[in-house]
Length: 387
Image (cartoon, rainbow, N blue to C red; front, top):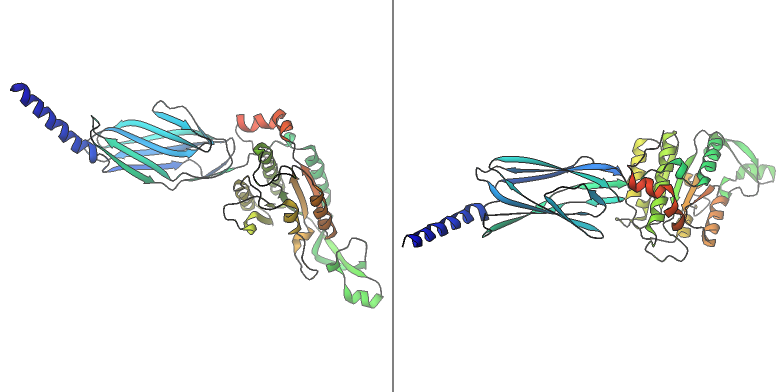
């Protein structure tokens, strides 16, 4: 009889603790997640900070946190965290206990290994009683966004053509024609755009005359990136490393130009989240805010083609001689893994319209695998460009 009452009392205690510690265990439990930075470059280290607070006077026997995070974030080892990795995402599960009226802070070291814009806005919190008879679940909505820019590439790891192009730009920096600075007229020469013809002077002299333009101290450089790995590529990039290296080159060039006090812009033919073609181009401008905008645009590039690159180039050619768009007089630097015949034809049209077009060829996958860039980007923190 005494044994029966002992079992009965034990059963009542177990049920009471299940009621108190089980279904009500997540009441007055607060959770907060934040990142040490909102943006960084591929290869940089950041911290993810989690704050869990138990405001109750009753302890939580066990608390489990589950989060779906990008696979490109490499976490440092932590004993209480289990990580299940997939191709695109990784599942983090942490299990621990909370004492009464306790606040704990957990710091995770993360190495950002993948470029992109990442939203980490969900988690699941679970808790229960000692014997697992009752439990409570609470989905958490957490607005956390992380932007990872392309890694900067050391100048020595850039294609050799970049160094020669740098020298040409420095020379033209003080001899670049300014379309808005008119100093007189001169006779028409082969290759002069039709919208530069001075019709009154032509009628007066009987020969074609064009505006004589002054010179600008700073050329405006438009960096145009081709996401297509080769001419046969249909839509999805088949060699991501080639595209990532090209974007690293674009980021390095933009930082180098703006650091030297010149205007830089960026455009590409890849898919972006907004699907608005105008969001895939930023016209040249000065300053650190411009560089941030360019890097943001590069981070948003998806490894899918939006349109053939030769069609994208044609969009930079004025549609009529009546238009007065300064973009057709910019220095255009094309960063591309290949140059097809349609691309060459588009470049010729741009040059006839008055642009100075240069090409920076991106190495193929076999060359990149053997290069120092592959190890320097993914084995070490991102290096900043001087200037």
